[in-house]
Length: 362
Image (cartoon, rainbow, N blue to C red; front, side, top):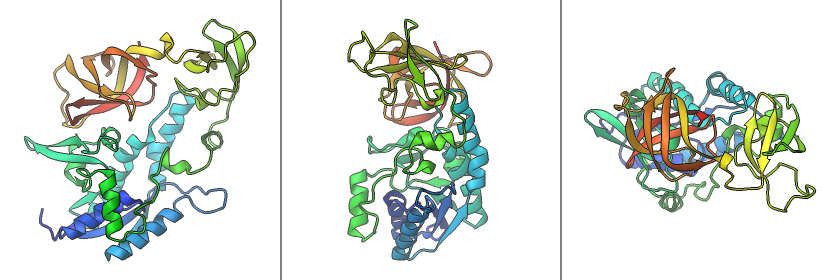
């Protein structure tokens, strides 16, 4: 790739994509920015949730003297990401829309749009690295272990990675902010976005209730005693402590309660006063919709490391074939609060091998 070829950056208004665009321009590439509008909901003050971000993105692009446009991908997001997000919650599971957004929106719909505009590649502000090995693209962890986002990129394929750049993948977040401040970018101290991007600052329960009618049900202890009612089983996740509303139970200790099981068919929430209750610990699970970044599944059984949530440290496991297009994963040690609907992501040292959706626990 020659440096006069066009690179289109997914510019979000945040500091990471801004510095990514700046670094590419400094290295002589023909850089353009495109802001993706993936959600068209409004905050309580009537403003679109993306308005402040697009304003920041425009100011950054003006500073960098690069052109910027916007693209409305909200319909794609609704069809490819949000519908599945709702289905999973209706089934009592806890989905991760960020993985699907990367696969279906940022590195598919956006990539196709950029290529139609003549882009050689797209770039984003993700904290991850790329490496060629035997003519295949490998997805590597970021050098900043605290910000590494390879987990959320586990469902990308070779075509998507071959056409992508991660300019800040080898940097630490503190260095990214320093670079932004040194170069006068207005968002150098902007707070990182957290949680599910399209919800904004509104409470999660009120947001979800717009799309799924809550159905109250019983809260029971592991011994079967009814101690309260929940507002809707999809509001809760395994291991959850906050928001149960069952303090002050007669003849119970003051220890906090945790969700240890969800009886979906009965619409019942099972709780216990034990952070490490046996119901919360599992060694085995099945995985569906598995993506191998290389395009090839390793020979099974296969030993590697895996994580069942973004912030978890890598855990030793063995992957085996199961029936009905499922993989069976067994960990060397028990794992707390494995959550169906979330992604399990596989690693070999610092290489992200791929991942899939946690289906059942054993």
